[in-house]
Every structure is written in C-alpha cells, then in structure tokens.
Length: 291
Image (cartoon, rainbow, N blue to C red; front, side):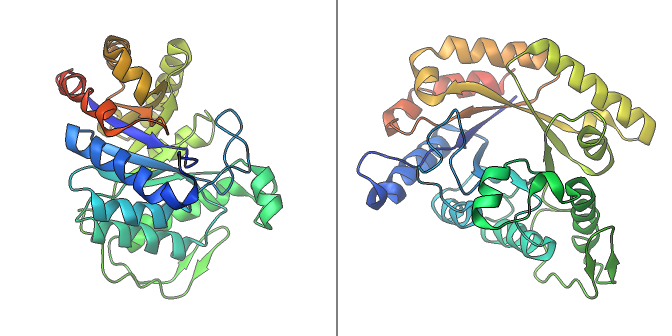
C-alpha cells in the first residue's frame, strides 16, 4: 500500500512570512521518510471544518511547482481541482508543466467542483449551475487527446479548441495518472471507469466505501474497463501529529482499508507538526508499504 499526505492548512506559526518555510518542513520531511505522494487542495478559500474561510490559502499549481523543486521522490497533485476554476488548456498545461519540472511526478487530480461560496465571492463559474459534469467529461476527453500529442481540433459539449498544441509533452508515459475525486454513483464513478486511472473516496465509513467501490466495479464491467488497474485512494480523517503519537492507529486503518481494496491511503498534514513528527512515522510508512 502507498501512503500520501494532504497539505490543507497554511496558517503556520509565524504568519504569512513563514508559510514557505513551514511548507518546506512538511514536504521535505515527508519525502525523506518515504511518503509516496503529497497533495494540496485546489481551493481559494479554506474549507469549513478545517478552518475559517478567510484563513490563508495558496494557489494550488504554484504551490505544487514549489514542492517539485524541494522534493525528490513524492508524486504531486491536487486533491482535487474543480473543473470550473480554469480553462481546460490552461489547466492541462499546468499539469503538463508540473510533470516536466518534477521529472514525471505529477498526478492530474480533477473533479466536478462544488464550493459555490468561493466561486460567487471571486466571480468564478458557479459549480452548481454550470453544466459541471459536461465540462468535466470534456476535460477528461481532451486530456486523453492532447497527451497523445494529437493536435487535431477538439469539439466537446462545452469547450472547443481549434489547435490544442501541448509542447513539451509530459515526462510520465503514457501520461500523468488521472485521479477523479468524488463518490457520485451515477456520473462521477462512471467517469472514473471510463477515463480515470485512480479514484479518491473518503474512509470515514467502511460500509459506504465498500458500496462505492462496488458501484465503480459495476461501471467498469459495463464499459469493459479493467477495475483492477484503477488505483483506489482514500482520504483518511487522521493527521500527521495524531499518526506520530499513535502509529498503530494509522497502521490498523491502512490494513483495514487494504482489505476492502484501497491501495493508497492519504492522511492530513498538521500545520503545527515539526520535522521530527514526520521522522517518527518512518517505521510506520515502511510497514504500510508492506501491506
């Protein structure tokens, strides 16, 4: 099993001038102890339940570019980008660039989007009234086209690109893995089966998780997709400090999720954690890799 780290807070001790150093401590420490991936949320406001919406929030792809420069091994991606936030060509260029500058370590994390508060506040498309699933399918189709260096005109349900040139092409072959976030059974999981290389589901309720995976399996059977080739990731409600203090809890959770088909568990970075907290997880990360 793989283990990842989601960084979702930037209100570090010391204020805005210490965001870069705090971020560096978390990322380089996780990279050093053997984490497989680091993820950032693609939001412009902090999310309810994590912090106040006015708390600091960094732009996702600028942040990932910074992380690419200070890490060596971890894969990097968004958990996940709302399709409404960027024009398709701009978004896919950002992912391609991340893959190139990181030496082939990018994931393409994408979803339909849902946060209407930040969208309305910033004058973005309202995700709930913008044909978001049509937009999402267009972007997924376009990704599969342009990452084959197919420059023919693209005409989707929403987007039209007369000459989609992407040069350089990604380092990762055949392309950066496409992770589609969300558990919608009719649309999202069908899109995972049709276009995705990975899914992301919450781990809070194992029975719900099992059900979602069964739905995904059914879609795969219908579409003729190999269910086993789709990477199943799960965002766990445990943070790095809690995991360092009680590594058995993290190990038990990873073992339980593995029984139900999850192959990549993702925990959350604690904004106050020091490098030593991550170093304490080295043995646990090794054991998770052995599951």
